[in-house]
Image 1: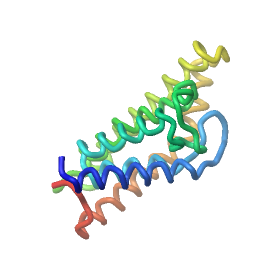
Image 2: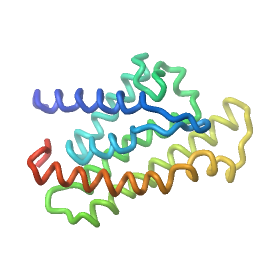
Image 3: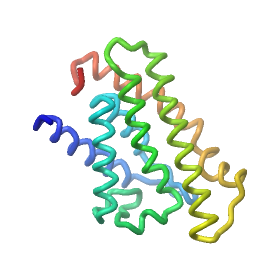
Amino acid sequence: MKTKDLVLCAVFVALVAISAMITIPIGPVPITLQTPMVILTGALLGSRLGVMTMVVYLIAGLIGIPVFAGGSGGFGSLLSPSFGFVIGFIPLAYFAGLGNREGQSVLKAILITAVGMVILFTFGFLYFYFIMNNVLESPKGLAESIMLTVAPFIVKDLIVTVVTVLFAQTLVRRGITAHA
């Protein structure tokens, strides 16, 4: 691993952490700027380094650095009903990197990144459902869980996916990328 890769990883961990501080609490899952920043991380750093960046972000938060939404961190974050989205950032960064490789068409980049979004929502929904029903003992049905974790975000995040991919491709065309 090159020094440049480590520095880029650290910079993007910081950017994702900063984007987590900008929250709009609308329920158990807040709106943050993390999703576009995770897509940008994968798109600019590539799948391998994007995944590594999200793993470092996850570990940083779990060891107590307040990098998660609202300035939280520590192992107690595992009990947060929205923590599944943090886990889902890893495959999102992977698919964003995969979709935004050199020579990829814009449409293909958007579609592959959207696959990452579907995986993100799946992790977030399933984790929320599990935590609410088995850990916090605050039962939520499947339909209610979907209404709390997917429905308020799906249109916004599909738009965010398109806009962020277009932005990332513009940056790459201008030579701002870390992967080949």
